[in-house]
Amino acid sequence: MKIFRVDRSLDADFSAVSRALERDEAPQPDILPVRLMPDSSLLLKGDPVFLPEFARGWHFTAVPVFRVGRLGKFIAPKYAWRYIDGVCAGAVLMPPGEVRSDLACCFDSAAALSPWVKPEELPAGDFMLQIGDKILHIDTAQMHIEETVALLSRFSTLRTGDIIIPCLTPLTVPAEIGLYAALALVNASVRRLRVK
Image (cartoon, rainbow, N blue to C red; front, side, top):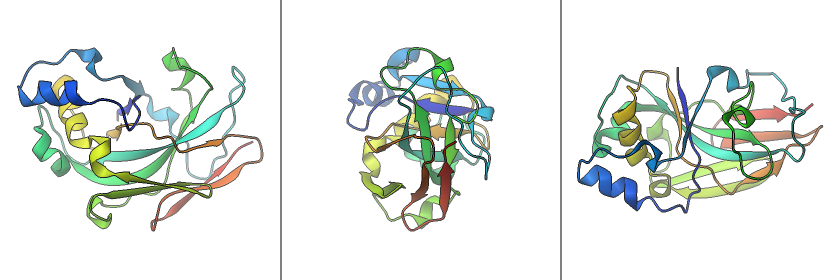
């Protein structure tokens, strides 16, 4: 299983990626800031989060998460949703400031996922993330999931179970010892986060 995390904000310019895909050009690998996270970076169900000692001021960033449901290579953007079989809310544990090394964000238990739901169970065009008591509405088009799937599949075969985090959101909560917060897609099952 591969976990692709795209380190771009919701409002980042995506036009270069879209142009490359429209022209069927071979895009450069650095056109999208992608980090590969190991499967051990997923927090197991029921486990608490232990804050790493190499930094202070940790926070959780809420992210939309998509699961690949079938094998795919060179997927056209218009067919991307055929390859997605699950959607959930995620929380990525992030240190303060700019992250320069993958080791600073791809360590064990660096990400938590809420229970998966089928894409067709979500309201069309509206993606709602909740972490703690904060809720964020995202227009599905802002996530550029179609283009992200298409681009990733040009460099790597997507396999059943692979996970894609297409963007980072401005929705954050401090990850402080003693935190107990809900993580969910609104109107879906909840995952509880505990920080020790």
